[in-house]
Image 1 (spheres, rainbow, N blue to C red):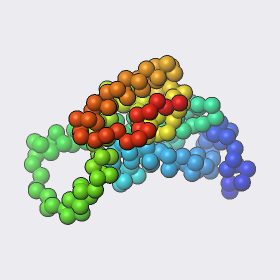
Image 2: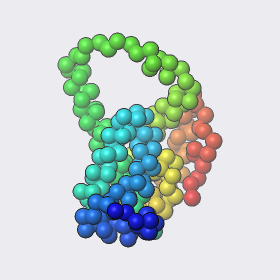
Image 3: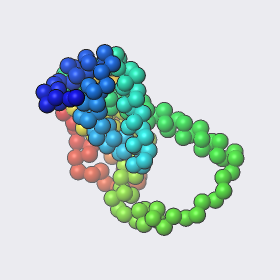
Image 4: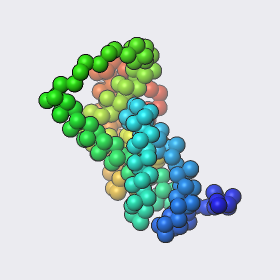
Length: 201
């Protein structure tokens, strides 16, 4: 049974028990970060059901690779979000393979969904989709930085840990991404949301 003190132990201390196979300690890590991982994946994928599935996959990977975790200061979150980025990328590759197959084997036409049409009329969702599309058009190394710092809420030092690169590299990638995203969003006819492209810490 988890004690009150265990809930406040630092990530390194809790994770030392996770590495030894302690499932209750892993539940503490899940409770701390599942919401952040889910939100990060949802912003990338745009589908709540996919985000739930991929969040589960992230934590399954975290359990299997529990001896590989790297910390930013006392936090395991950057490593988890880095794992989330790789999980999303793998999912997208699988989806592309499925779509290529579907083009060769035509599927029955789908009946239009009225709810989908209503959703497309909501400006906020349209702008969010345009932002996702624009971020997806960035070079992979710049996209990873934007997703971790802007959507994942990490500072640049934590993003450097998550990506396994130097802090200066993250700063340079963010600077280039900010410039590129401004143009991509303009092509979509969407203004960058306030603060979205500001320099992160």
